[in-house]
Image 1: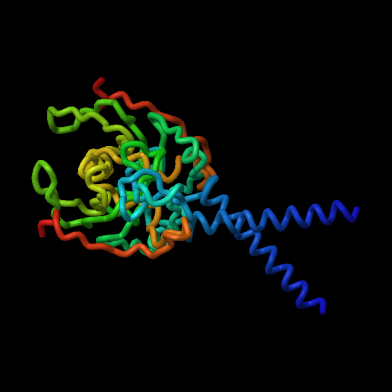
Image 2: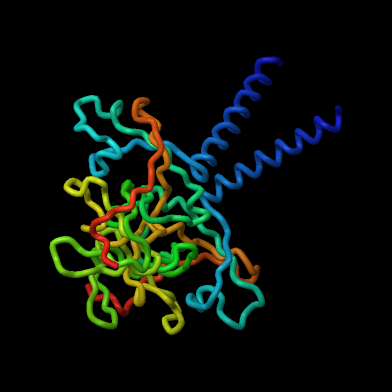
Length: 163
Length: 169
């Protein structure tokens, strides 16, 4: 009888911890790995380390919907909804962006995202502006590997935006 | 010593119940009211009077489809509006990626791009849907409607309805 009680208690504790973990990851923040080099040198600068960068993703911005120019965000790929991409927001709704093929106005409720490594990035220059509803969270810090732990700053780009 | 222990136990129990409820609502299913008449007669078939909240249909939205990603023609889905991301809409999927749709009032046909779908309300005269804002990315979908749960006389399963008009192959 003693063993059963102990097992039940342990099970309940792990269940509670698991639930708290799931809820926090869904609603507030989490850690995820970055693949690919479309955001070099901000993430995964090619020769510096063995492992992919892991970043902290915060989801408080989703409730208040406070995105702005220069934020690095994680969003569902509009061409393949099973995958997620990480890019930087270059323009919000109402801005004009100069793309190959002319000047594009970003429609209401959308934003324009581009990777920091323009040469090797599949972004809004290919699939156009994305609805803000696709965004899953905003990247605030790199948390791994230890030598690259740092805050991600908002960087306002100078070229490309025609106001 | 009984009262503080009892109070603490009640606190822990309600916290756990709250967490379980939140997790189920986020990942398994939740109940939402349907506003507006863009999906008549499937939802809200009658013009509402001042009763409002009591006569809106409440539906069960299941979210398991988001992990399995199994959407198909005729599903009624809840999605974030592409022009106003704080709002959610309920419409029916009438075309999936690769299908061709004929745009009303013009002679164009639009091919649905990869990863997008075309949504329309069952009540075409009173519905703001893909005919206004174009195909939407499947990533905007937040769940699929399976049953009406309220009012009691309208409890039932929502069927997939395949539309006959508008699709040009």
